[in-house]
Image 1 (tube, each protein chain N blue to C red):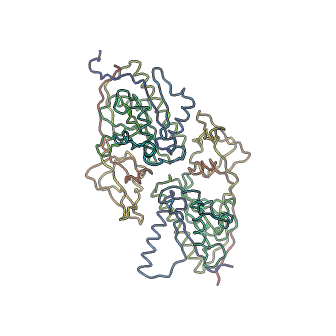
Image 2: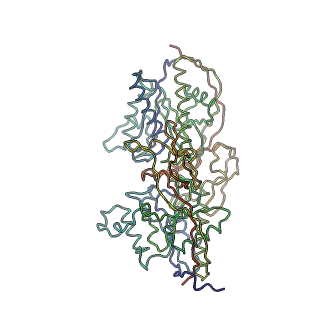
Image 3: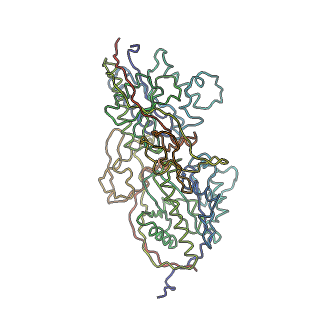
Length: 300
Length: 313
């Protein structure tokens, strides 16, 4: 194996109004301060980061532009002016803090904490289907917690990265059940890292994965671009439940049902996520598969 | 038997407004009002002029609660008479404009009824908000709506508290009615919430039409929940919250909270209990917009109000 030791970063507040991650990272930072004060331990293999402090202060998703879209190679390395959006400057600071993949001292994995207004439960999102670290973490989590795994190859990332997405929770709200679920999820992930770093052999196996196929938008008015229908009540809150051709999809404001016209059944998720209205996404669709996970051994 | 002498007389309620977008990210009202501005046939009734109106267009455009200051707190006498026009906060300018169109507040020229449409992240279901226990017209309307939607539920929240009462956009009218439907995240439109609000308004307008036609509504009793006090989250010295609404209380709007019941859960897992002297009925539990207003929930007590018979003057 190429890696000897995994260094992980846990990021909260990438979106300033997704509060579980904001509060969890704050609490973990407080707890770490106490441990370091009392016991003078070596820094752990975990770095805690509050990613978008200005958006957090205003309890908004972002100040100028979505931070989660500022980590492409182009945005990190292109020219930057003084009047650049806050998040573009911030993404460069984070990239320097976390280190680009392969550079000395860089984190090996970023775990980015998010909430969604969609009824997705605990969900892990990987950005390719062949990151072996992510697959093993997923397998570990899937054994002990109820969770879904999504592969989204569309979002380019500069390092191994996994998003932990938990819903449903309104933005700007912290629900205790959701906070507890995220705390458990992060704890399981950190447990895996500790096990890995102490030489544990992880066996081969499979993980259940949903791969994003497409996103679809709401029906909109051609002039105003305002939406003209809502997610149908028969689909609302039914993330990860198979949608068949001709099932109800949207309900217009005049009460008409619009149906799913695809050729094959697909799994819906991110159904009615607040932040996706402006991105033209009513829901995403995915296909289900089992992905091979090879055994790994840490050796040094 | 004639009850002319014991009926309270009210002027015909001819001028009625429906406000949406007082908070620009509360989507049911924004959507309904935009729909009705385009095609108002659904809200037309004989003998009623119903005007749908977006109160905070800039906040709606940005899908945010407000731009400078909360419009639904802005209708104070000081704000309504403030000078300075373009230098005033956006929502204060809007309050003055709304007062010009639908008021002046407190005068005979003011609109008869204003319905102000809101959503909440709290699990409040359909809630009608009443600002005065003596507004028999509104009480009769709320009684009518409750009966019309039965067995579905619509509760009445009475906020007459001298300190906690606030200067709402609807307070410009003679009969202000708040309509709060949840739970719905800000910025999201849920079909069930949208439909529930629509149905309530339909019955409200039906009531007004019947009233204007001369129907007498006999005396009735209405159960209300009267606002008592606001309870904040526990906070640290820097003002950051240090606990969340307890899972036992979360989503428990309108259910009794007894002394000793779990109320908050700290981030490290400790339960904090309700320390009041008697049972109360909490509501607005975990409303997103109230974190900055230092409110985790409000306490209420159940009361039965009596409304006299009413009839058009």
